[in-house]
Length: 139
Image (cartoon, rainbow, N blue to C red; front, side):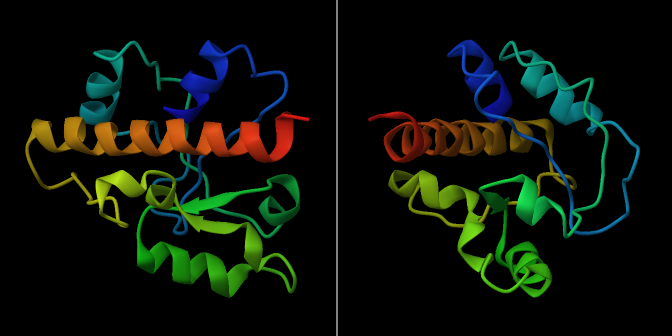
């Protein structure tokens, strides 16, 4: 969702984004077919994504490392090199109006769970993009 928003705003040459998991369970696999279908209904193509595991080098490559839930945040915090802890954030902290901090895992639920999760991720992505604009792009 974030990548889609960045591209739509013409900022893909300025802002880079990637997705990675804290575990190796789905390395090399495309996103869940239900997630792809829900995203496609919003005009977002996820078909080029493949699972990869977070690397220590990601802390140097990216200004923000975003966790969907507290468990993944804790794993990222344990991997963070000294002095890079400030790059860690909960994704939904960029959508405070949602009044929730953790993105629920829709994997074992019905298809509407993916829609709900994408709503949350889209709201947080919009908030993150606005934050980046204010913090890094505006004079």
